[in-house]
Image 1: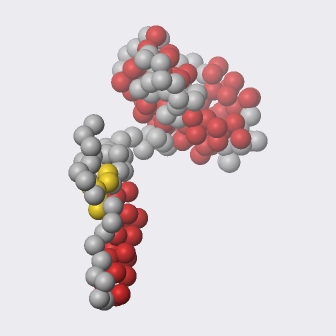
Image 2: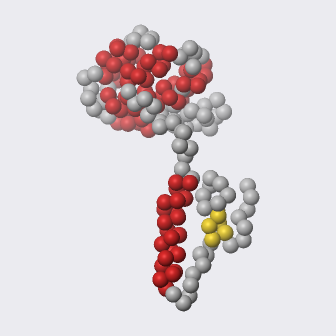
Image 3: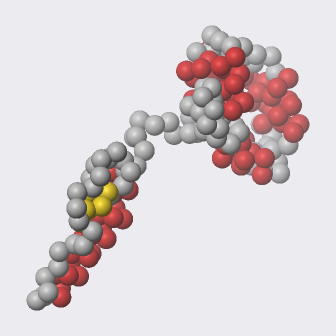
Length: 171
């Protein structure tokens, strides 16, 4: 990585934008100093995070955010039993792993899975019910969460995230 020119520091890790380490001030007029500081604060709080934010085309991480639609996406996959697909289905819900085989998708849906585990109404019985549904029987999967009003949106976020994250590995 290139070094910052003398007197400048990198503005963020996303590119080669540099900010002055000591912004110029007008020693005669104090209000200019305040204006410069306010301007620099604006740049640091609003502009830099926007410029350094994630790719706007990046997945939402909740995918379709719907139990039925996520199931329909999974049902359309041509390779649901392929090793890379199975790895993705499992690894997306677990903490991030830098191992080569998992690093592109591991941990992507970890927060949704943690939310499901933390919600008391998201019982193991709901998970087992969904697992026992025939492949492609999305009405059955939907029925498993139908009575769990607090759990359903959490499962929808998790299932939508997994369907989106594993689309490439399973398609």
